[in-house]
Image (tube, rainbow, N blue to C red):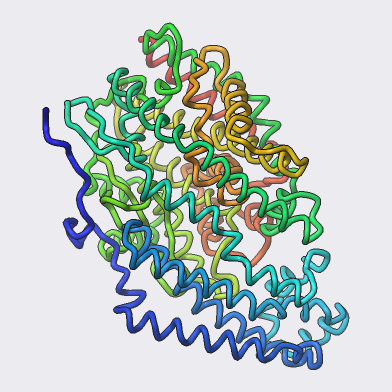
Length: 602
């Protein structure tokens, strides 16, 4: 028996492959100093309660104090969170993260009076105050966003009570994260070459791409066997989280948790419903893709562990991290030299935590706040999917960088609805680059297959998740218990509906809900699908060579939250209130599917 190939310990990884968080805080003393400063600022701010109601002219000084407090708090939060993510087993970092989460709740409690007092000022009087001070003009949209929620803001005491419980409301998500990343032991698994590996979510994703069906089946069943052991705990954790969403929506007088979540991003619910409707209408495309898999792989029936393996094998498409960096720089050149120079800086300045280590948070993300670099977490594997992940997360980080460089703090972030558009546009640019620079039909088929898999995973699958998430909240709101059995039954039903008649009804996939961290993000997943679809239009504009369309795209990256997200996208050339952008994306999927069918029939 070969030795088990273990994940490295954090300290065994070369510094160049780890993010440098010392640029946020050089040492614990600096962190502690800011922590104490935030505690003091929160106390000082709380002592101003009542003054805005009595003296509206103090709005500017109170508003600046409010934003300054949260600017410092966000820096503490993101540092503690990333330190914990790099090794979730470390009690020191767990404690640091918990300490900041508690501080966040305390700050929220001590600032809870601000919005109710602001809304207590009559609209006419507030307009007069803003008009009287030219500096307040810089905060007009920020104030508009706060006052737009007049019907949903509670009394000062009620807001303070809810704010004080915010860390409790987040407990279910924290419990899931600790269980999923630190405590669950998936055992070991043998890969294609006979190497025995510690099974993790990252290794699972890679082995599902294996050309060896026995490996795929074994890793699929082994992972879900572990989740199955904990399904009742995971169901209780998720249902508790859903109840907090419904509770919050109810006390704030929203019709539903979905309405509340989308209103925070200024998105009408019709955008969500249109996504579900248009995806349902185009499910025959996904069924056709599954049927192609059945034919090409020579299967009697397609199982869910057959969905991710490339249809064409892997023709010399391995990418080391160094290879991936160079390919990314070449693919993104169409966005201009300034953009590419900044990407190169990200690679050279240790923004990226590359290697999977024991205890590290699974998956990938871009993080950071206004006063930090836009860091990236990866769990690198030498394959095409990880190249796309790198380019995807770099899209997020460049969006963050350009927004913060061009907007003041109050507009220096962007709503979640816009977040996935920049990342997916980068993926589309990479796809086109790879197709244009590889004439080998085998490689072209492989890249098109990857695009189709990406579309499947980002549009079809995330919409499937969105449908399930909507059902979760509706069931709880109607008083129906969200047991593991109920969740699994409905999830299995939706999975069959999406993948069609050629897919086997694997009992393991009924448990997929148990391992999806995004179900704890509160109506987040639908935005992957809308973002991918919008990115189709934007990337076509960039690749057309029209400098005006590229400039419009770069302007979107710089806009932050300076206007509504739908207005930002309208200016970039995509009307997301209509179905046309979705239908266009499905048309591109159909076109790519046609290309792949022809390539594989030769």
